[in-house]
Image (tube, rainbow, N blue to C red; front, side):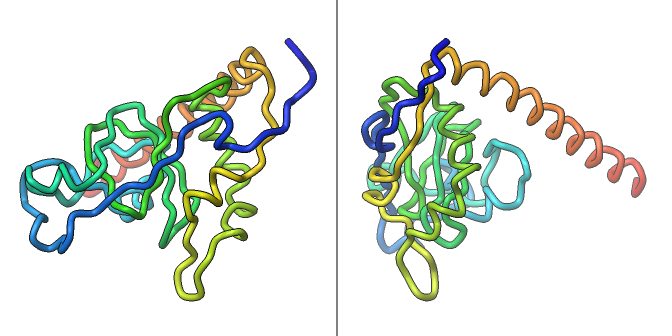
Amino acid sequence: MSLEWKSCKIGDVVSVRRGASPRPIKEYISETGMPWVKIADATKDQTRFINFTNEFIKEEGIKKSVLVNPGDLIVSNSATPGLPKFMNIKACVHDGWLVFDNYNGILKEFLYYYFIVVRGRLVNQANGSVFKNLKTDIVRDFDINLPDLETQEKIVKILSQIDRKIELNIAVNKNLIILHFS
């Protein structure tokens, strides 16, 4: 385990791409089909994951959007910018999301926790007067101090254990509320 952390840009260690929306979106929204991830799907749940969506897009909209798979890391870039989430479902993301892949020397879980820590600083670099927007280049060019993979694994292990306990408590509380009002 090395005590030295290397300084680089996020774009040096992972690919960053923006989601896409079929236009006009109203023509592609459906009651069934491919789950369509909205910012509200991410903000309604306090866990690290997106497990379901309230909206869907038709089959022909998938080709005009960006498909994400379970395990993929996404980060909101507008409305509530800088919010990281892991996908637990296959879905499509619109242009209000950034998608990460091709990890090189960084664990996606470490990147998730990094976004949690630096979210305020990252959002301060966003553009826009009404809604802050995190452009892809802003995220790619954002500095990251990166430990070796062994250290990343140790950090992720500790933080994941804490998150699992929090998520378990949230689930227990939801069940208690349901039992109370049944």
